[in-house]
Image (cartoon, rainbow, N blue to C red; front, side):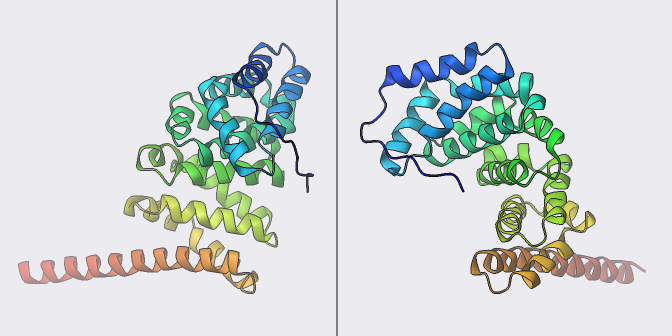
Length: 244
């Protein structure tokens, strides 16, 4: 529910570089929050082309390492630092494809997860972290960094915490679908009882296309997996029978 930002001119390289420098130079969590909030506002502009331009410039001026360092240092001091950092990184993954591998390489995923541990049950922190993980799971190269057990458990807990929130349920189902490209990951989600949570999301939000379509797609993935498992088990039984 934050108000959109309207400004006419594009940000110059110098302005963006200065904003990133303020994040890097912050010596207290209050300074870090103020500097990160300024970047958050830049990426809330209603003009999409302007937002994309700013994201590319932010990436060029090394905003990712600056953010990761401040997350590691001050994430536990402020829920807003953690939430805004997640929002900024999400926008970067939309507008600058190269940012995905940089976030992974710089330890951004772990830093985000560890800061988020201080705010369990905070819908805004968890929601934005989940969207970030989900976006990173779209790419083959970064998927392996976000399909670890810790992160799956984190997202499933977020689903349990907010069963009635359609946005939460949609982004969590999307994350599960994105990491579920690999059969081995689906197997782990199965063991973690993810399927009943997705079924519940579908049931509770069936009048909301945003949720029900994604939940249906995710359920389909689980059902396909179940079918393959059954076929494999049958094949093994037959093989044993033949051998005997």
